[in-house]
Image 1 (cartoon, helix red, strand yellow):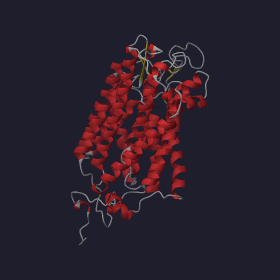
Image 2 (cartoon, helix red, strand yellow):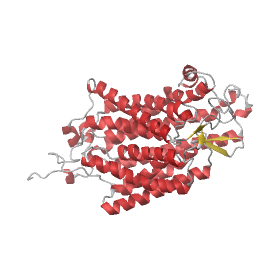
Image 3 (cartoon, one colour):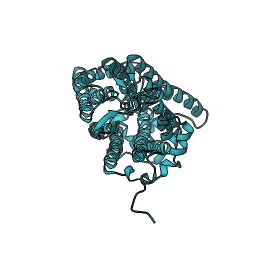
Image 4 (cartoon, helix red, strand yellow):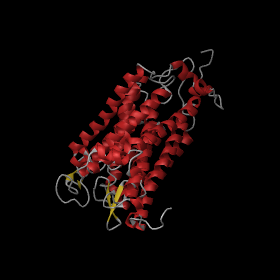
Length: 457
């Protein structure tokens, strides 16, 4: 029989519950981000590929989600075990899907062994959502042209690789973060990593039929529903504030917040910076759109502003964040136009993440240079002393190179293996016909005649 009296009541206090709810809300916010990404996908993919593209994203998400529960979290959490003198093996024993602490009721765990265990257990769910989001983002770059089997294998491997990268680059006592690399939101392992993979896969897969020149079955590539694209972007905007709260650690006094990198911050400043980033990006995106008469920058603008600020929401003040975000759409514009001139069929990850994401990481190094961070709260001396490190440009550049490099190497190895086994690319004929019909036998409810070349042409 279960006892009504917890063995270790300090693990399940009201204050613990409040923190648990904060981190649980981050998982809810992450799910809203997934919904927003799917809406963007449905609004931007050809009608003949919408169902298949959506299903592949969902399956890829849950491959990442399940793999993170299996072993991924153990990699990220190992930085805190190593700080305490433990090893990766110790972390895996405790936090793989069958691990001791991963399956223990909070009230039965001695605080001397692991204080605040509920928060760590909730973090598994929270970070598993982002492991899935990495795969969803990658799918944007390979959608409609990578074989499903190849993508699903890639999703599993990418989850392992991004989990290792999160240990290196996101937290406060991982190898790069403890040395000075600053990344509040995880831009490196969530955004730059899949962008690095996209740099390889896009070249291997080539352009989609009708994207840059007419195909016998597709006159041009058209986005069918701009309303869904816009709704998806605003859904992401609504979900991310809860995620930002989950990138904060709270210590006594209980309202004291520091970022995941142990930089001093507060809830209000972090959220106001988030709003300023979206506003700056949206306004500059609108200026570019009306100047060039290209509607895509109305949608790229706010996302570019957000991505540029995500690495520094904890260390900027809102006016700084607004000015930084004004520059982000200009960077995305330069990258996007460069790619279009060279007929590189990738419209999201490279302009937003390689462009605006790298720009944002560098701007953190410039604007917040010298800001103390790193280590762990309560440690006063040694390698992991609280806020012993400082933000600087050099470590930001090194971090960018490491994150992109992880993605490039992962995709290079995978593409070689997949090309010689399951195959990597969907044929041009099947792409033009539409994967909904080729794989599932589904015809679009509206005949997309605008894609067809007239018989007389």
